[in-house]
Length: 309
Image 1: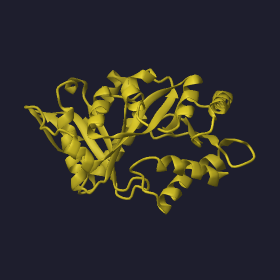
Image 2 (image 1 turned 90 degrees about the horizontal axis):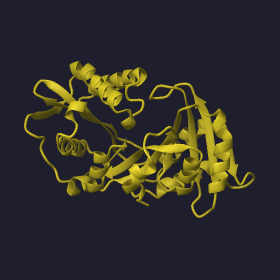
Image 3 (image 1 turned 45 degrees about the vertical axis):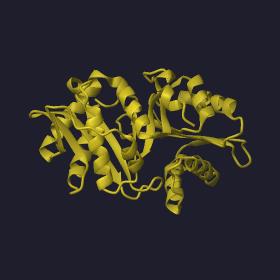
Image 4 (image 1 turned 60 degrees about the vertical axis):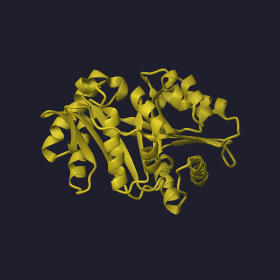
């Protein structure tokens, strides 16, 4: 059963233009799915032959963003009607789920998206994927506005940067509902400490005078099993820095830094309209959709991105 599920997931990944098929990719998918089979619940359709759809879930006491979650994997074969089965299976399982989920749904799973919406889940954010060189060709680069500077982050700035995350997401939780959770903030501080220990780190701070007003960074996985050398982007602006024309200049610096470090691809999640707008300019494509109960936005909020294949 696990082997069939791995095959479904690899089929979905293979529909992405930047995917690099390899043994490493298959091993990574197996590592992601295997815990659901050893310590979770798995339902498949049809039940007694090669599946056209699988829903698997397990309880996780700890998550990278703080609270306990139900980790969920949904995969299905294209061209087969599985929407009603998915809806029925999810509705029956949901009473056992935690209030928070960890669910990343591939962009091609339209039936699963509709089934999840029908049982009360919503779209929390979208994960977008881009090619560094192509984005740099398409994107209109710019410097930061006068009065702002961007520079590599220093260890003695970690507390200030973590404070920006806390303030930004306490003020606007719709853009990262767990962003002000102390457990997440502690994990961010540890991540920054580890990142800054690398001589070629790409963690940047934007300052207005002596005051740090934004963070922009990318954790580069030089051997990402799906996309090759890939930068995982993260950006956070203090409330006072929003709407002041910083984003284009920040992206200009990040893309240059990724290119200098040999990154092929970059990815990141967002629900911010400005980020989604610039992502289209860069030619980024939809990789996956983060879905959870209690999402802040209606699906129409993501319409320009969800219109992609």
